[in-house]
Amino acid sequence: MQPQVKVGRRKTAVARVKLSDGSGKVMINQRPLEQYFPLEMLRSEVLRPFEVTNTSGRYDAKVTVEGGGATGQAGAIKLGIARSLVSLDEDLRTSLRGAGLLTRDPRMVERKKYGQKKARKRFQFSKR
Image (cartoon, rainbow, N blue to C red):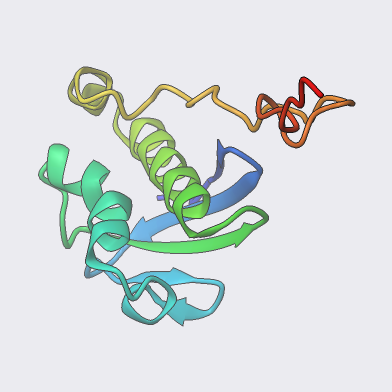
């Protein structure tokens, strides 16, 4: 099997995922998954594509991720793993698509507008 690098993005985070045959070990920026994401919620989100396709423990994932925060990085890794699984086995596409794991989340941070405190919050109005 030739390992291919697939890219996943979420908010401003970019993850490059390389899957190879193995025992289910996930390394993120040369650190194990449990050390990189101490929160169980983020770990389960990263491993979701493996659970949906029943491929837990079949592939090792080597991930480099940059930008964004923890949630964005976990979402980017999830999309990258899902895309990598599809490139290895096209039959997995239907189950991943059904779980919504192949769709890139388009939501981005709205820009701050001038004359306002934040994107939508305004300065306090004073009548007098």
